[in-house]
Length: 134
Ligand code: T46
Image (cartoon, rainbow, N blue to C red; front, side, top):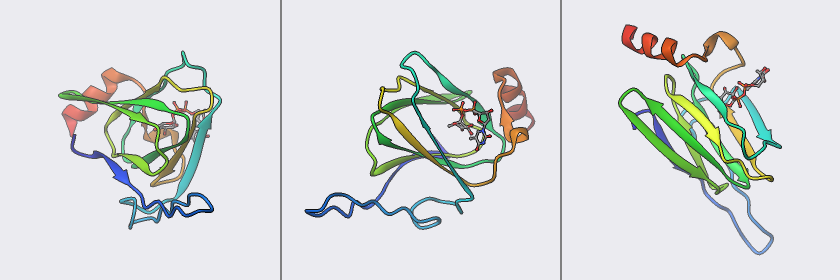
């Protein structure tokens, strides 16, 4: 899908363990203005269910696993994130749902801008309307 893809990061592993560097603009396609992380989510919980008007993000599952469904009117893809050396880049105007969290999931998200609730489209009908206007 355009505007959404898996990114692979360098794993600087040695006998002392693993280290994965992630640099803005080099490893992720934007300047990182914010990070947040999600953990302690029940298996039955579905999070997300929204799109962003302008925001770009990279989701990295540092621990455990989580499934991410991304959707546009013509396309739907499912990703199973369970590898801290890979990130899912999600551009703007993509509907995102996160589910099937394991007990130990730690999901790190790198974001292109500060938090702004007006950037969220939390209603699918409104999302479809805004895409038509674009
Ligand atoms: C996204 C998916 C992948 C803040 O106050 N600051 C923040 O930086 C964030 C991200 C959230 N919040 C507040 C807003 C809500 O009152 O935290 C509460 C939970 O946020 P939300 O219900 O949007 O969480 P998710 O897991 O459904 O969505 C999050 C991100 O909000 C969203 O940008 O794309 O993860």
